[in-house]
Image (cartoon, rainbow, N blue to C red; front, side, top):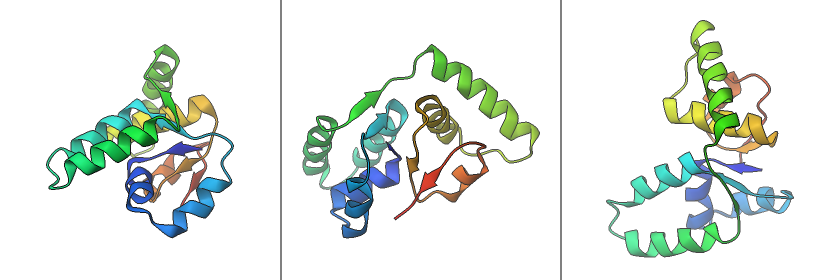
Length: 125
């Protein structure tokens, strides 16, 4: 299962509903883009030190997915496809979707616009 930024926030906030979903995952993958989004999000938080520490601990429990050449190719195809269909999604989310398509795993996210991406399975909590 691939984690979106809002899933990371929910995990680190201890939301009980997400725990049962995570238990069904055979692997947890964190895209580089999500790591950057989360780090940016906590950079201005008044509890950034605590969140940074919790995030670093989480990083030890997941598979980190860097942006590599196959993902850049998938990104280009997906961005073009979504634009031509008239259904663009936020830029960073195209990168996340490309990562999801590359690993062929479901995405744990509350962002419904991922449902516009063909062959992407989104799970919410």
